[in-house]
Amino acid sequence: MIGVSILGATGSIGTSTLQVLALHQERYQVVALSANRDVEAMLSLCKEWQPAYAVMADEVAAEQLRKLLSDTDIKIKVLGGIKGLDIIAALPEVDYVMAAIVGAAGLQSARAAAKAGKRILLANKEALVMSGQLFMDEVRDNGAQLLPIDSEHNAIFQCLPQDYEKGLSKVGVRRVLLTASGGPFRTMPLNELEAVSPEQACAHPNWSMGRKISVDSATMINKGLELIEACWLFNTRPENVEVVLHPQSIIHSMVDYDDGSVLAQLGCADMRVPIAHAMAWPERMTSGAAALDLFDIARLDFEKPDLDRFPCLRLAYRAAETGGTAATVLNAANEVAVEAFLAKRIRFTAIAEVIEKTQNEIPQQPADSMEIIMSVDAASRQVATRYVDDLSNDLINGKSNNMSGGLDS
Image (tube, rainbow, N blue to C red; front, side, top):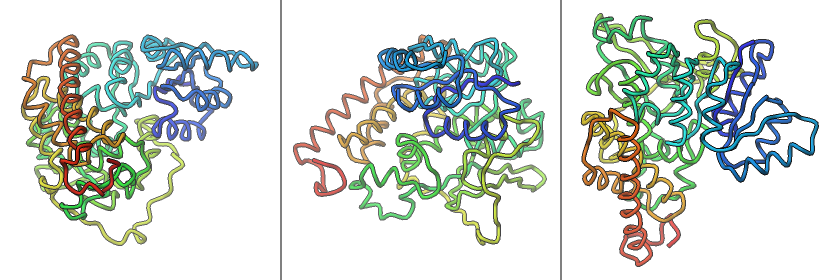
């Protein structure tokens, strides 16, 4: 049996992972599950899967779960806090770690899995965005195995030759084509973007995702973060990664070879497909996803992204080209700005404004230690919070246009 820890079990990726594992219980054993604060959801999962360990990142929630489980016959060791996440990422009985905690909170546990030499199924962007070189070094030095779960990176992985790690140019690859749906505002008039609501931004046309990542898709900063990830995963430079808008989300990404061939991975917009691929690799197994019907699709469209519509993508390219801690600044400022937007404190278009102002204020440093990375992360959040507060006050005081729009003033 292959032992599995799922970090972020109650989120969309964690839920999809458990759906895949439910189809293959003769092959996989769920050893540990984690969540942040959703005690009821975790209690339900504990009753269904009966893992040896359950972790709540929030210590208060961990104590609540302990009390609820004490009233049952289920014997589960409940841990709390970041240390608990590190423990279940490195357990000897765990072979695979699904790293699906959203945001910088998932960085340390992903690194713990790397240091323990696990197969890491990486759905957390920040491990590579914030600490790409350090994380890749830990994977290599400890004999860990890194398989991407993002549908785009998983597609690229499937289309590359096995020896891609020596460098894409050395294996005949000209460029990577990273596809993006364009989110819910791909065709919305630019003058209407300021007034969109969090509910509109979270209504992705193709994918069912959490609120934060849905907003990231709407601004297309998710694609910028994926660009940075792709550079680390596949040992390439930003200029060799081109973002392509593909509104149907059927081609999940492509690889363009020197001989003129372009290999693409196609599939339904269902995260169970890349999860099953990474779980079974180098074999294949059923995922529970529907088969792709090409006759039903009928057409595939492609467009270049408009950087005036998606300024966050431009800012991500800037961070990727700058290197060092620039990506840490980008990620931290985005997390602060998206949280404020979802709380209706700033407008949708202010997300890019907060990021760019923070980038301009925080100097770039070499990202050669976690101490530096976390220091820059904290400083960036402070700066971004200051800009959010200023913009929020402007919004309250009526200094922004279209005050009758999607945000509550």
